Length: 272
Image (cartoon, rainbow, N blue to C red):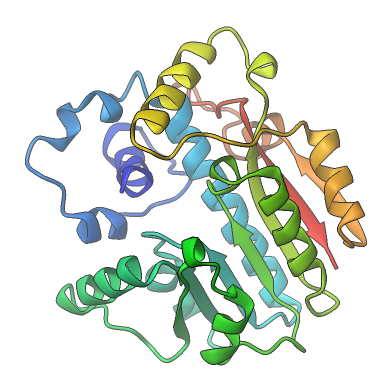
């Protein structure tokens, strides 16, 4: 919910040009009146976090578009949440199938909201309900809704690794490394606290305390060198780190409003 609202807040609070123009998540979430007055929606306090959210979303969508242009026809979102790529971008790529993997309850609610809002569920959008906590096999869940392991795909995992153990992250990497040749994984991760800038640490500390109090503590942190090494050890042929500085140069260069990504989140791009 918070990610969807931050993406909407980017359009509502920041001046154009927009890194990503996404109001679908706001419609799905339908927050209570006065939601913008909440501390976690404060335009100034959340500025860097909001920028990171929209930058990573834009980066992955650009990656999907590039891969689709060269013939990749499957896009998998692990922990899809209120992602709205299928509602905003699929019209541009008639051959692309989007597979959203998430908790059964979350998906049932999202499908209901999509129908209520008139978006519906097109044939090229597939929901793969997987109960991660019960140890369900998410690859098997994908196969049950038409995913073809013989075809290359783009697999995205954003805002997930911090809630997993390092062993669970490594297991996910090994699983994706066995996908068809030509597949690409984009996975976000958090840097250790000691690598965060002094300006970012107060926000990081608040976020970590809130996550712990909410029963979803942050469990794993990686350096760029450590994450790329883990990806290669897991079986990927190539792995690179896309830094916050890379995203800032790509999407925020020339802006005069001070909107910049948080340095704490990085992106692993690994290829089979």
